[in-house]
Image 1 (spheres, rainbow, N blue to C red):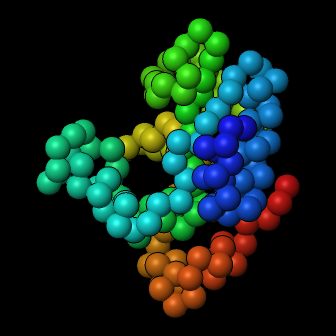
Image 2 (cartoon, helix red, strand yellow):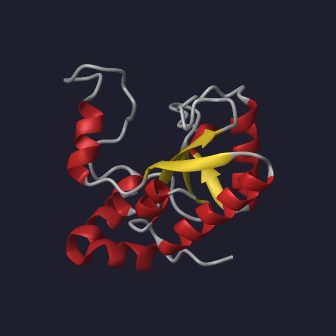
Length: 161
């Protein structure tokens, strides 16, 4: 994986990082490279994204304000595939893109759930450990406020495969 991805993976749950590395290896074996385009986000960064398309210019890209995204707790990443002859790591979240279909199929074999399967607001680049909640709840927010990120990770009990 490239240095950008590695730096982002340093900030997320270690087991998530391991699974993304496993996915990257499987993708590479199939001629696809991936980059982690988003990893950990602060609640303030999440609030800025949430404002986009609402109180700030741009297209709505999230339905989660700060504290309501798995990114805020280090158990989700967004990825983007690259391919020879295609602009490197150009986001193309077209569900019919064969690269996405292959990446999402391989993600499942690495114990990753996908935001692409969400019914109301599909989030194709979003991956997280399958045993984790889709969205953090009040309990996780309280644990974070009281004990920080490590306390949240301990609560999630994400296990290696």
